[in-house]
Length: 251
Image (spheres, rainbow, N blue to C red):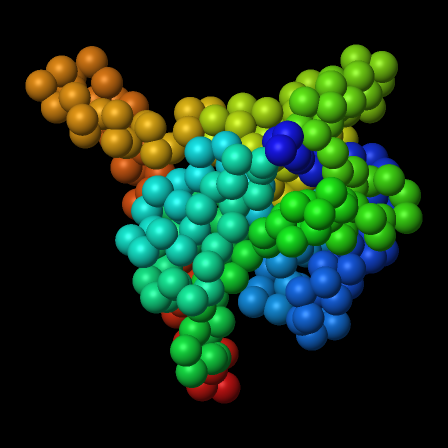
């Protein structure tokens, strides 16, 4: 099976939320307008103001850090694109929340047996040669789905044809070593509500390759410390989110 990808074009998004509801319906979730990613919404359309919007969803990294840190192999990268998770294996340790460079996995804070939750790129549809729910329902063509190589070529074609319209990069082409969600942005990454500090190296290699070569560690110690600093910052961010959720649960 070919490797697939989602292509999101920020210039075409009108913020209608069809992708949110399409995703929720596909996964038997509560139909609602999310204020952020949560366990009942695997994608979120953020209103940036001035009729500008962006999507948040699992980026399906080529070499996902979430899968590399999961101690029970609940998360797995498929050969055809999606990063899937097995709810029956998940023990709720939240290591993936700390490790994800795009801050995607959410947690069932108020469930008796809470699990990690996230977009799985409609793996059940993809394996049947169907597009993702979000791509199939988008009324403007802002979200497209197809073979990754074709999506990448289309992104490059649009960028070359309208260099003044888009930022001069395809978000997801190099971030975290490359992802299976590609984004054409009309605004800078940070202004688009997306993390702008994601390393271009795949993070599992950034850390583990260094640890495997301890005798020769000095030349690459800076890279290792950079990775550890980033993971430490994510841990603090997740801890702050946990504290906020605890506060909400006691209101």
